[in-house]
Length: 153
Image (cartoon, rainbow, N blue to C red; front, side):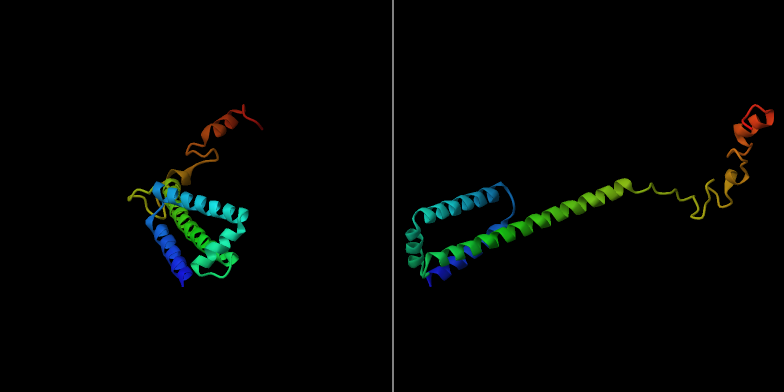
């Protein structure tokens, strides 16, 4: 019965810790928890009977079972932490994508420009429709050079 209370308390504490946030204090508590877990793991390797003794005091039959229960709690905390981190990264990525889309968006057209306007800015095509072979209305410099005969043949 004691192990059930300890496991339920551990799960509730991990869940509450994950809900609290991701500040410096939260990270310090996670690091302290990891250090305590590592110290208990080393102690159980050096003196395996200690883990069995602790398991019997908590109402678990074997030390290996107690270790399994502890790993389940640690895994739960890892999954919860990873989920929170992924949500935060998703929000940051969405904000960056929106900002990039706004920066790369074409400038808005003025209200006086018609949607079907051609390259000259009017619906009839403007000056571009009467342009000669040089791309200008007068035929451009290339047309006047070829008329003089000094241009390439």
